[in-house]
Structure formats: structure tokens, C-alpha cells
Image 1 (cartoon, rainbow, N blue to C red):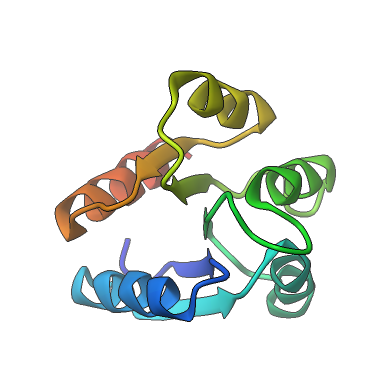
Image 2: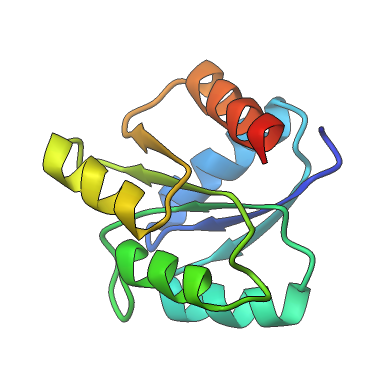
Length: 126
């Protein structure tokens, strides 16, 4: 499980650092960072072997929901599990994200334990 490659997408440098450090402590050392959906799509093309995507919702250029829809519409990437990590915890928004193709949802702030559990759950059902 620890050998998976994770794409962490968040426009906040601080949040990306927190997510990357949390992932590393949980045993996930292979993390690629992107600052928004546009950057993330480019990284997906270049890296090619991403196993899991963690994405924020609120970002400039291309938000997380638009990014999820782009990933799901591309046959090369449509099978990659996606976890939305966001401050948006309203039930309607969670449902909207799930409909767009998100596999799981984490509301900020979160604990390292929650992040690890959600990753394991998504990867075990993938």
C-alpha cells in the first residue's frame, strides 16, 4: 500500500505541505504536488502513473470539481481514485462531488488518522 504515488492538488502551499508531510508520516513517500486543476492535469500527463488523487475544491484557474470531471472524462485517468479534501462540508456539496466521481471526501481540518483511513478505504476498494 505504501508504494502508491499520490497527486496532491491544493492552491495553498501551506496546505500542500501539511498534506505531503501527513502522507509521508503515514508511509506514503511518493507525492506529486499541483497548485490547481490545470497544473494537476499537466502533472497527470507527465507523471502518468498516479495511483490516487487528493484534491481541494476551491482553487483558481480550474477548481477541484471541474478537475474531477476532466479526470473522469479521460479514459487514461478515469479509474484513478479521487479524494476531495476541502472546507466545504455541506451535504449538497458532498453529494455534488460524489456525483462528479469523487470516491471519498475529507473536510478540513482533518487529522492524519482520518487521512490515512480514507486513503486505505479508497485504495482497498479500487
